[in-house]
Structures are given as structure tokens and as C-alpha cells.
Image (cartoon, rainbow, N blue to C red):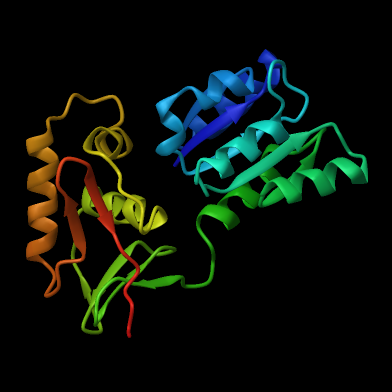
Length: 219
């Protein structure tokens, strides 16, 4: 899981980073909202953790701008601002949860996991008889689970989390392989292998722009 953290308290930020990276997650820290919004990582993260009282552009303004850009990635406010007016502003801006400081790391982890990996099955239809279960990361074709690799699961998860949106190759590569140097050919090979495992081609190649998955319209 990739986490983007907006937090200007360096001690809290490093503690959160250490806690989650010990559990095989990746945490990117930003100290102000403008710095966060200017970074391409906003397109590849799984969840935002946002403090409210940050310099230059605060957390609420930052989340509003993310939503204006069409980025619907879940966001959690982690803040000492406990007044009910701030809680209302946070949810109005589009957050999924609001956690007050001081906090327990385990509680933060539980809340994030519930948002990113919902307990209940969340099947998205991507073809006439094809589904992807977001919570289990399983591809289902004609009522059978298809054996796919970890990279193929990550590819499907990322495209479906951004359903109907075109994602360029660089963004997809960054999400799947992170810091590794990978060529467009490697991505194309991955997509070709995934296509060969399904009876319906649900990954659309948008010439000159990238790839997308469209939510299947039964009608």
C-alpha cells in the first residue's frame, strides 16, 4: 500500500512512516499542501493521511483541490483540530474518516485498512462475465477465479480504482514497480499476459494517452 502523508511535524511524520513501512507499506511525506499537489505521486497513492493545520495550503484546501482534479483516492484527516466545525469541513471536503490527535498507531492502521481493503466483497464488473474483487484482488471470469501474478493484481487494482480514467504508462509503472527502472515494453508484456488469461479484453489502450478500464455497462 502506498500512503501519502501531509504532516509538518517531523517527529509525528517519521513515526508514522516507520510504523507503516515496517509492515511493508510505502509512505511519502509532504510538509505543505502545495508541495503535495505538485507531485505526480498523487495519482498512484492508495490513501492520503492529511493534517489540517499545515503551511502554505492546509489539509482541507489540499483535499478540495485533489477532488477538483478528479482524484477520488480515499483520504483520512489526522489532526488536533477537534472542533465539530472542522470535522464538518473535513467531510464536506471529501474525506473518508477523521481521526483526532493524540492517536494510537494501531487504530490508525485499522481505520486505513478498512477503507482501502473493505471486509465485504467489492466486485466490480469489467466485462459481460468478468469481475474484479477489490477486497480480495481476484479476477473472476465466467464464475471461475483466474490465476494471476502479483503485478497483474496490482495493475488491475490500480486501473479499477481509477475506473473510466486514462492512466499514462509512467504512472502505472510507478505504481506497480515503484523505484525500479522498468520500460514501457515490460508494461505492455504484463498487459498482454493478463489479456490472454481472460475471455474478454477489458483493458482499453487509448492511443497516445495510456490505458483504462471502463465500468461495464450491462445495457
